[in-house]
Length: 368
Image 1: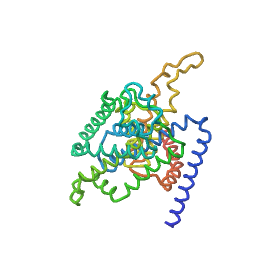
Image 2 (image 1 turned 90 degrees about the vertical axis):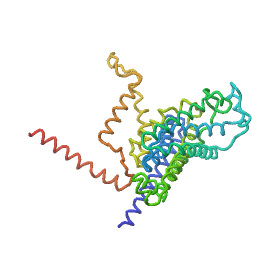
Image 3 (image 1 turned 60 degrees about the vertical axis):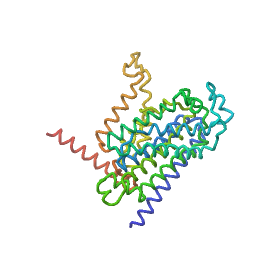
Image 4 (image 1 turned 30 degrees about the horizontal axis):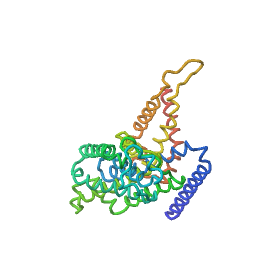
């Protein structure tokens, strides 16, 4: 019986994977027609990578860090500097020129992404030495401060010939196609899932549950905290590099505090401690903001203009929807659970019974 269930789950997963590949193939073949939808999906997939990396640290290790925007900035600028075509650099660094140290540096995007992740991980290793001795809110404030320091350093006039200062970087090569974009994001998430399910992942969860008990079992608390922080920052840096390739041009303002809050929103909405929850949350939050954009446009009915429909009203509706979701799902959409075909089947089977219970309740209220 168990073998039959496993084979069915594998079959369903294969069918779902083929469906996704077919959808990506259709969108790629009609990229000019569905460019808007493609941009939403690509941004969602990139945010999913960063959200899962944040969940690795917050949900699975119990460390509350708010430095994601800073590490994304490191990754994004690294990829931009290493991938901008040599012939286009004169037009990019047109104000103060480019530093000879990076003038001829160029490598393929895949190598640039790895270097971006390693550089972000290296900075995280240095930052982690002082800040990981802090706990809870103090750790969050410290990492948030370091994130702003990184952004300020990138925009500093002294680094104009490397980061181009406040002018930002442009002419960044984009993804060759949709399959590359989604393949890279899927690979990053898969690697993090393998890590979570490994012995290191079990050590991270032990730290989350009870640090005293974990230390009593012989775990070096600082070592595993530092390891989780560095690994999370590596994939956050890769996510920043992917975002640079998606946007094709970046500036320091892109990586403000609000970007970290957006990632935190995705993690909380999807469920702290759930990888599939973070992926689901990234697509829902990113797509939801775009689908509600019509609320920002003026609306006139029978010659009467509706006063609520104006710029900014979209975010009001979006915030109300988030509040409703949080009220009904206090632990996020997935909680700490992961997606399974059996769970989906149970959910579908429970819908009619829930509907019947609601009808009986309403009839009881009317008769009383």
